Amino acid sequence: MTVRAARLLVAAGLVLTSAAGVGGTSADAAVTAAAEVAPPAGVTAPAVATPPAGEVDPVRAAEYWLDEYGVRTAWGTTKGKGTTIAIIDTGIGRKPVEFSGAVVGGADFSGAGSSDGRTPVGAVDGNHGSWVASLAAARGTGAETGMIGVAPEASLLSISIGFGAASSVPFVQQVADAMTWAVDHGADVINLSFTTNTLTWDPLWDTAFQYAFDHDVVVVVAAGNRGTGTDQVGAPATIPGVLTVGGVNRAGVASVEASTQGITIGISAPSEQLLGVSADGQIVEWSGTSGAAPLVAGIAALVRSAHPELDANNVINRILKTAKPAAAATRVPDATYGFGLIDAAAAVSANVATVSASPLPGLTLEEWIRLYRRAEVAPQPTPTATPVQLDPLPKADQVERRSPLLPSADTLRYGTVPLVGATLAAILVALGVTAAARRIRSERAHRTPSR
Image (cartoon, rainbow, N blue to C red):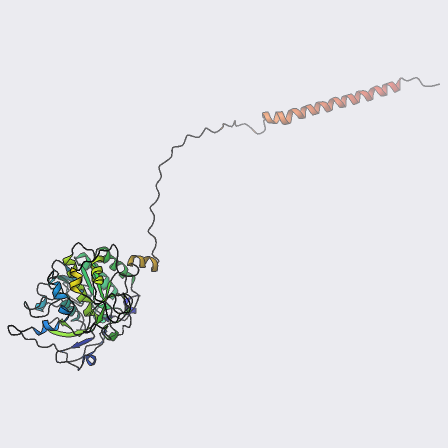
């Protein structure tokens, strides 16, 4: 299936409100993030002043996930230094000071952005990439001020793509090319905060995602949101091997609007009352699994930084095995919560046994392709054989060439001689009979007549 046949949705742009509550409550301010729908008019970012000395910065205080999900504790071990997170989205803005020194490279695959991937793509979704990046690795504006990401010392790759009509390049092609570029330019973690809202995906993604897995990259994907019409997870969250992130509210319960459900969900993270740095530097509040995914991508970067010896499967395994149980889950993994709620501190520091294969249930992508794409079996090598030396064949019998009219030994033996013998015998018989007949006639002629 191509992207032109799918309804492309940004997985997270559900709720966008200011501190003043533009549009009323969050429910009233909810907006569909399909590329063709514009956000509500009049949305502005809250004005955030630098707090007086000794007071808590309101932006930093609003990032409740830092304390409630063990991020600050994990920072006692690492802040993600030495790792690289690729944000494949609408581009990371150049202006925000929160990204100063964070972006180390980028590219555009939409055909509508700039070569470094830093120009926001799309009139509707242009800020989306900056929001996502800020949750993963924003630097803040000071030691204890401004928005800070989960892995504030990780590097970022800004890879811009266009949602919907923002690009004339087929979406599946953009993503496939962006994935390959990210891998080739050192990504340890790739974040994909979008959904196609369909279960299946284009075969182009088979190759691109397998390429990432073959090069030991952790791929984190948003599950999608009911508020944008995703009742069940859609691709790329359905691709085997990705770490799919579902969303929960502040109480740790599955979000009604800002998440969805599906058996491929691996882990859950906050998806409501999130903050994001816009491309122009303003801070906004938003919701959706597009925000939950980069929180997990940031944790993956922390784990890779603290445990550089671990491969991608073991990074994912630590995140899953150290998850906090979800109270409403009925099993592990659960179709709504996956293995549970993220715990950054435990993922970084807990004792977790290593694994030799993917800890995610189900087939690997390679197995799935072989089974469902009916991939051809790799051609077998042409057998080689050592030449065998044979003894030379005997010479053929020499046949004497002669006229077929001349007699041969066989014709003389079986034809001419018997025929001559039979002829002579017949002549002798004939001569004998003739002689006998003459003698009888002679005797009759000289016999004395009776008187």
